[in-house]
Length: 99
Image (cartoon, rainbow, N blue to C red; front, side, top):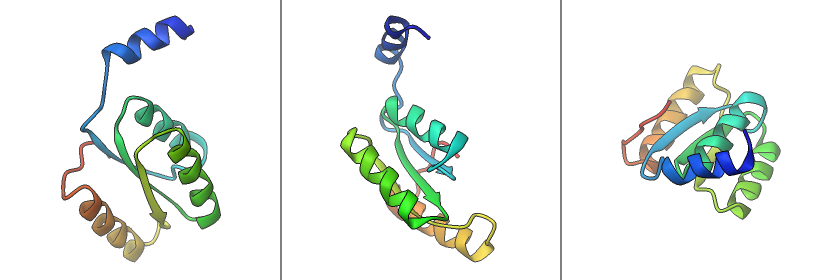
């Protein structure tokens, strides 16, 4: 998408006030989804199995002014998923719009 077209779309659309959970947000498609939603002002929560990758991404996103929270979680582990749900519910006070 051309720069002027992209900025025109961003000026018309916003996700401000919207909350989202994206698992695997430090790599690949998950990372791209986090950044795109954040560009539209969504407040996000993401998780990663790797604390170092998570910290690196959270710091980068903070520098960009994005509102992104995160924690370590292996989404294949039922106990860790349950803990993730508790954390997300706490951060977003029970209000999750995008999963």
